Length: 116
Length: 116
Picture 1 (tube, each protein chain N blue to C red):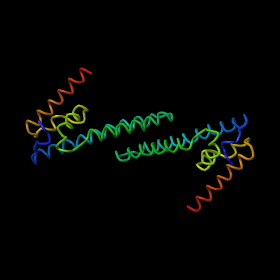
Picture 2: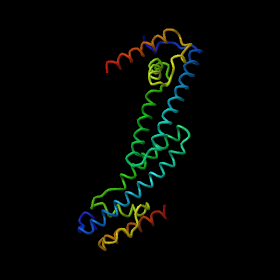
Picture 3: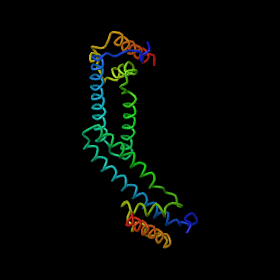
Picture 4: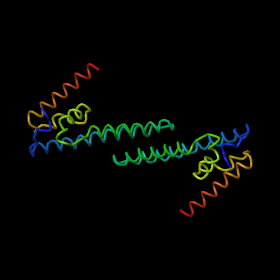
């Protein structure tokens, strides 16, 4: 299946946008909580620079993970589910072929992580 | 005066090392206090990423400013004094020509900052 050729109906776009935006909120809240914990525990300069490294890594990870293009969403959603930023139930309303694709990708991730 | 040709006696090296190490401590303590203030005030993701930018800038500034090579110290010390990380009095024990060079550089900085 070539994701670029899939069409998204108006109501699917609404579902996707809402799920995506909610995942953004969850991800940022989680990073922020972790950042606050780390920052308040800093006692040495080395630990302070580790917070910089942590933030840089998280920013990169966030930018890599969040990409709202319809050509990418069927890769993006499984990653967000796997990372715990999104529940599959938030995607109810997408067409069956899209949901199946997302489940297949998740199954592939699960298999890959067992093998790793 | 070519700084690379200046010789540093054993006792001058001790003075320089002690002053330098003290300035490192002052600089890091100041950055850390500022970091802690900023981190605990963070309330939004945008502010969190600003802390990353702050730390990156400070790390770069720190690495630029602190350079313990005898060929560089007569540039380094005036910068540390100007930044408030070092008191000129901590350099007592250096030869007169070195102290004069440091004062001239400081005077140059002062003139430059008035013109700027």
